[in-house]
Length: 235
Image 1: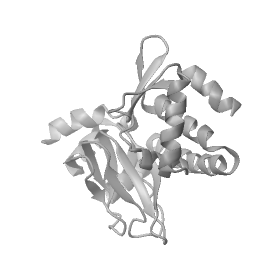
Image 2: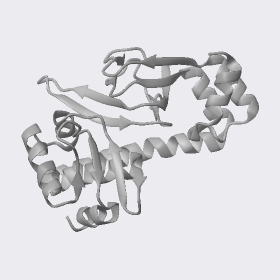
Image 3: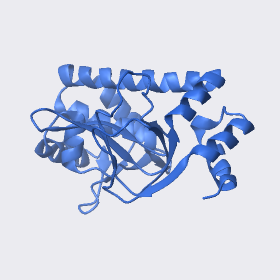
Image 4: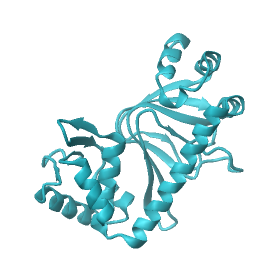
């Protein structure tokens, strides 16, 4: 991909809207465009922290492996979102891995270039700081959910948040999400078990909160996002 095409593509990314034309040109000259298939590893634990990643299209799972060998899904990243942005530490290598949940198109931004943009553009710096703070808040909320909420409430909260963040509106109230995750992966993210996820999704389907096909359970139709939100708030 030549620089002109990169500039056009980067200009459409929400997170880069505050960059000046000159900054976009500089960025386009430095970024590396990448494309990987579903289930491909983008980087692994222990990889050098040389790049910040910007997703153009697709879904990425960030995870960690505990000393006992259990895998923990830390975060999901979707279109127009950034990951690997927490570069302001003394760490030289990553403590997480990044795996494609779907085919993913992305840009690798060299750390030095990313840091320069933050120094040069206060509005961009503020947006990156807000992203980092929001991610920390989400981790805190997840911990609170684990302590204070029952399994069903945590899974409903996952569906609601995914629908709000990534859902496609259909008709007046319905919302379609394609989270691309197995029941086991949802279990890791909601601190439950695969059997619990399967049981609760089936219950929600019977209660007509959601609908999904037997062969496409990764695609969930939320009947009414507002009703689901009320369930989360009451829970």
